[in-house]
Length: 248
Image (cartoon, rainbow, N blue to C red):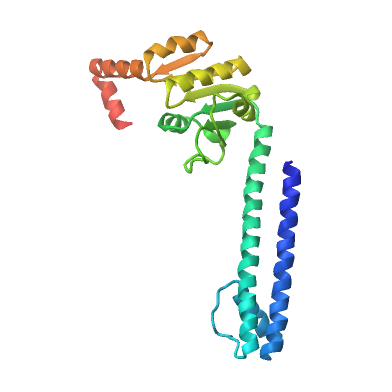
């Protein structure tokens, strides 16, 4: 289907280029005849008019030339709009195809489930460019601050089809950090059901949910409540730890 779509888009771009070329030739010859201008001047006028730039340095003076100019203006708006839309679609499809090719070649994938401040901080601490990283997040589009080396997939990470699309069978490590503990548990269940060999690390908000994750086979669980208390206790006992955190 991708190959067929690509061929259709390329074919449509070729058609748009043909139409644009015909429009330029028609405008050049028509203006030259109606306004008694040279082909060089008429070609310049045709480009300026079709692109709706309209410098006004060469203008029609005859009634027939003005009517012809109006037709060329409307023709130019439509032709360029179609061509620009097709070309933009082709570039978007080309970028998506490149991502899919990269994803197919990936092995030993590090899967990020979610995209929040914790995931961002995690990425700061690792060399993302040296790893095959895929990020799944329930966002409508790719985050602007996500490194280009990371493959992004829009969707819910607890859905089997989304995980399969992210090559869960080639995933060695999964980092799960979502907005709700329920989604974290569901995601961990889906990961374990599809690939038990994946080393799964989950982040939850409530300590009571850690036991559920360990029961389904999660390797490590980081709890905000527990970690917060441990951090406060560490700061209370050790002034040096507080100084280190202040400088971080």
